[in-house]
Amino acid sequence: MSEKEQQNVEEQKKAAEGIEVQKDASSASDTTESSAEGAASTKAKASPALNEVFGFKKGMTAVYDEKGLRIPVTVLECKPWTITALKTQEKHGYEAVQIGFGAKKQKNAYKSELGESKKAKLDNAFKLKKEVRGSVPENCTLGAKVSLAQFPKGAKVQVTAKSKGRGFSGAMKRHGFAGGPASHGSGFHRRPGSIGMCTFPGRVMPGKKMPGQYGNVNVTISGLEIIEVNAEHNFLMVKGAVPGSMNSLVKVALR
Image (cartoon, rainbow, N blue to C red; front, side, top):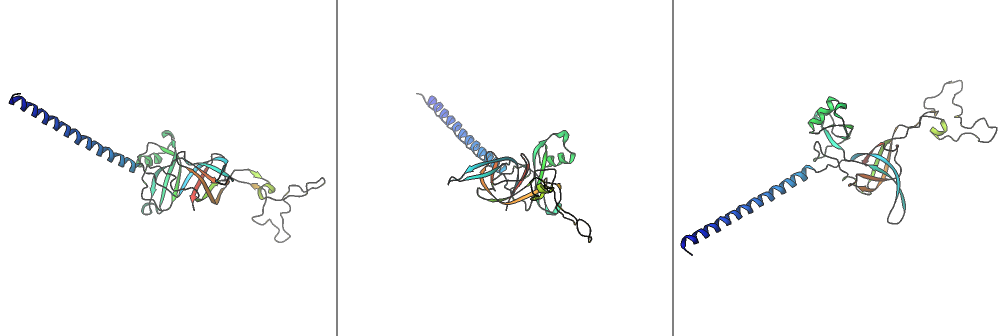
C-alpha cells in the first residue's frame, strides 16, 4: 500500500470517529432534554391535595374487613375538579381555592365565567363551582386537578349534603310523634294534638312542632370513617349512611 493510500485510510478513520463522537453527544443531549421535559411535565401535573373534596353519592353497598365483619358503606364518586381561581386576603378579603366541575357549553356561559376560564388558561367554563376556604397550598396552580391524596384509609371525615325532600308532611312523620290509639273507635290516630294555650297568652307559641315542609335541608354528619380509597377510579367508600338522594352533591372534609 502506498503512502497516499495509507493517508486516505487514516483520514477516513478520523472522519468516522468524529461522526460517532457527534452522535454520542447528540444522543446525550437528547436524553438530557427528554429527562428535563419529563421532570417538567411531572411537576406541572402534580395534583394539589385539599382538605375538602366534592363528590356524588352513588348508593350503598357492603364490604368485609379482615375479621369477616360486614360493614355498610356509601360509595362517593369524587372525579377530579379543576382549580379555576385563587382567592387571596389582599384582593378578596379571605383565602380560598375555587374549583369547578362539568364543562359548560360556551353559548350557555356568562362572559364573566369565560373571562375567568381564560385567565386560568382553560378551554371552557364549568357547571358547578365551589370554594374550599382556608390557606392556599403551595402547589395550587390554576388549571390543576384536585387529587384524593389527602384522604387516607381510616381517616375520619365530615360529610355535608342536602337531605331528601319529602314535601309537606304530617306531625308524626316530620317529628316522630307516636300518635294515638290505632284500635277501632279512637278519634285520635295521626293528629298532632292540642296546639293552643290558655286564655293567657291565648296564641300558638313560636317553634311549636306542627305539620310542614320536611327535608331538603343541609345536613352534616361528623366522624364517618373512610373504609376504602380508589384514586384510579376516583371514588371513596365511607362507613355508614350519607344524606341525600342518588347522584346528589356531597362535600367531604377532613376533621
